[in-house]
Image 1 (cartoon, rainbow, N blue to C red):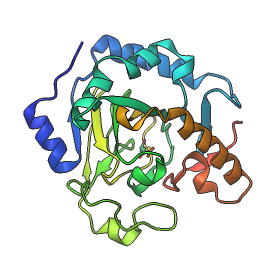
Image 2: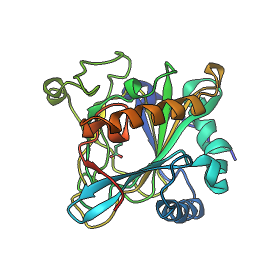
Image 3: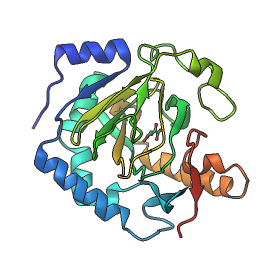
Image 4: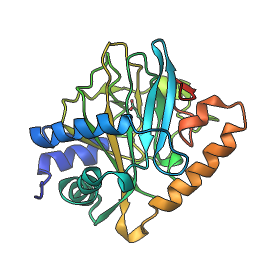
Length: 260
Ligand SMILES: O=C(O)CCC(=O)C(=O)O
C-alpha cells in the first residue's frame, strides 16, 4: 500500500524541516509494533547481534535504546524496508530511499532527555538522510516528546559544541516547538532539523521507533555504519566520556549504565 504525502504536508516539510503524519500506521499495525517492541526490549544482551543500551533511572537500570534489529525480526524488517514508510521517505527525498539505521528509544519513567542537536554529525558516510519516527506510546512534553526549531534545516550545521551538539547559548536563542504524537503517528525530519527532548517525568514509558533512510543512489551503508559504531563505542568504553556511550555524538542527557 502506498501513502501519498499531501501537498500541504510537503509544504510543511519544505518550510520547517519536519512533518507529522497523524494516523500513519493503522490500529492493527500500531498494536503489532507495540508487541514487537515489547518482545525486542526483552531480548537478552548480545555482543554481535542487536545492540541494547541501558541507562540508570531513579527506578533502576532500564533499557534506553535497542538498535540493529532488522536482521532478527521479520515483522520489523518488512515494516521498515517495504511499503509506506520507505516509500514516504523516498517521496520526501525525491528519489528512492534505502534504510541506513533503525533504533527504538524507550525513555522509561525517569529516562534521560536529549540535548539540542542535529543528527547529521552523528551519521557519517552520507550527506543527506531523513528520519521517520513512529510513536509507540503517546508523546507529550511531560514524557519527553521531541521539540524542533523549525526552518533551520537548510542552513547546514549550526554552531556546534565539543560534544557535536548545538552550542547551548545558541540553542537558547531558538524557538522550540513540541511535536505531540499519538501511537501510530509518524514524524519525518531532516538530518539538519535541530531537535531536542526532555526527560520522562511520568510513570509510563515513551517508546519511539526511529528509522533513518538515505538516498538509495548513495548506496546501502547500513552495515558500514554499524561496524563503525561498534568500533567507536568499544573505544569510548575505554574512556571516561560517559555521554558518548549510546551515540557518536554526546547528546544523551541520561546516565548510560551496564545492564543489571
Ligand atoms: O527519543 C528522544 O527523545 C530523542 C531522540 C534523538 O533525538 C536521538 O536519538 O537522536
